[in-house]
Image (tube, helix red, strand yellow):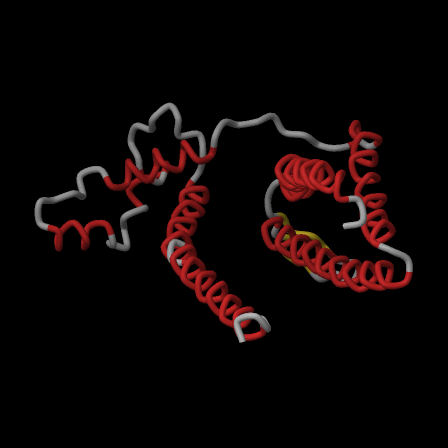
Length: 226
C-alpha cells in the first residue's frame, strides 16, 4: 500500500507462489502421510497388549485418526497465525505480518528434501479420474431406456455399483486394477457430487445479493448522493 509502483508485481508473485504451494506441495502431504503407515501396516492384524488383551488393529481407522489430528493441528495453526499476524501488523507493520508465515513455510520443502531418503514413495498409478469415469460408464451400461421413469429407476437402483465390482465380474477389463473398496469410494464420491453440485448455484446469487447490498450502503453513505 505504501509502494504503489511495486504493488502489482508483488501481488502477481504472491498469487504464483500461493498457487504453486497449494497445487504442488499441499496436495502431496496427505497421501504422503498415508503411504508411510500403509508401508508398515498394509492390512489389519491382531496385536497382544502387555496386559494379555488381544486387540484388532485396523489401518483404515488408524489413518482416519491420523488425519483428524492432522487437520486439528492445521486449525490450531491457522488460529494462532491469524491472531499473531494481526498484532504484528498493528504494532510493527505488514512486512513482519507476512514475513513470519513465509519463514515457516520455507522450512517445509527444506525438511522434505533433507528427509527424502527416509520417505516411502509409491510410483504414480495413472489418472484416477479416468478410471472413475470408466467405472461409472460401465455401471450405466444397459440401464438406459427411452422411458425416462425406467431410466431413473435403473440409475438409482441400490445394486448399480455391485455389478462393476471386480469380484462380481467374470472377465475384467485391463484398466480395472483396483478392488471392490475402490468402487465403493467412487460411489461415495458420486453421491457427494450430487450434494456439492448445487453449491455454485447458491453462491452465485448469494454473491450478487452481497454486492447489491454494499452498493446500496455506499449510495446511502455518499454525501453527494444524499
